[in-house]
Length: 343
Length: 272
Image (cartoon, rainbow over all chains, first blue to last red; front, side, top):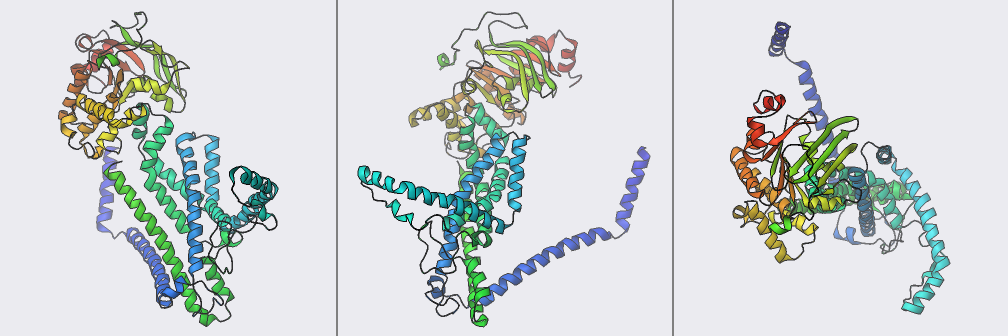
């Protein structure tokens, strides 16, 4: 038996030494080519956009609210789209991070790992990640606008007048909640509903990233804290979460990247074809870079005239996404540095 | 300092379960522990004395660490663990329904096998437990932290860099910091789970000196794989084998004249 094994080994060695290993060569070549191919595609897209878009970008372009024809390069601008996109992404982040982090904490720290409960939640999270974004848009319309928003309006018109009376009588505050009863305020597409729809869509990204970073924290640290007489909550808040912060922020960065370019979820929930002013309130509709790109590409009466604006708008969207990412990455780097230095 | 460390309750009358029983402080009676269906501890009864170092020895998987972790209820954290029997510390049944686990863990501290300082400053590592238990004033914290670091024989080495990261310390220093952190909240018992197994001989010697020093103030239970270590630092030794307590006696007796054949084979290095 022993002799046989030794024999087999020497044979293998001979085989390797003498023959050219075709499959090794083939696979290293294949993986290298695939990588090059992807890099090539990425470079082509970026170069095409930068070369064609750069000349059309000017301070005027990024700082103007278009007043009439936004298909005309001389009068158009993308300020409301930049503001709208940034605004919706920031509001989304404010909602998605706490909900995602709390869910991840429940899944990793509290739920029994093998219980039916946990498995159902995990399956739900994974399925959420696989739902097409247009479906989220329809969900946002049906749930946030038609259900939540309409009921908010109804509540305000029912209780608003009496609430106004009470506030005026005792606190001397004039909110005029009742003024809205004729036209819907919340029961229509609005920035908050678009942001919430995006938050639901990016929830799995944040949950998974947070879970990974929580799992990476050594059990020894949790045990050390508990053995000192800390409660589970104290351990999570004071030991676990600070350590997980960079990972949570990675989740946030991924969510922002995903959401910034999405159009389908906001289509029915808040985006407008044209707005004469910047969005200033959560119940306002807004213009959006991604949607504006769609509009420029499909609705223009003069394609040749619109093309430079289209390129420029795409470039602005890319730069905005990069900018949001870079801000988040810089903050994360600071947090990491602080964590490493101390605590 | 010594006054605050004495137990609040006088132990109950002495029963004659296992060998050294002058004044049992930790009374383990008929303890069995199950991970799901498998039984990791089999009907263990042993009484440990106050302000004495008791060593738990035995081959890997014999249940010594599991029993240690019963004493501050760290096993509660593991799913599917079931414990039978009773454990009393200072006369209190620590598995009684009305026991506050937080209070128990404050009185029964623990040092782990792998040094696990928090990724915070040296100062904050010791301050953490103190703050949990209501020490808030800066001056109080400063005194208690200096006191604990001195007791853990670490003060001289770190007094100039209290606010730098604990992760910059050497392995042995980190483990002494973990000891300082455990004693800062003035427990009555300190459980040590192979505290020197990851350290070099010099660092190990320092930890052993420290343990001998600390037994003036604390009841110490130490799990160790290192037979010489058990012989050097412990007063009493319990030998475990596959979930059973084989023998419990004074360390001298265990190492020179054990009653059981299995103990003799193990301490003389014939197996394990």
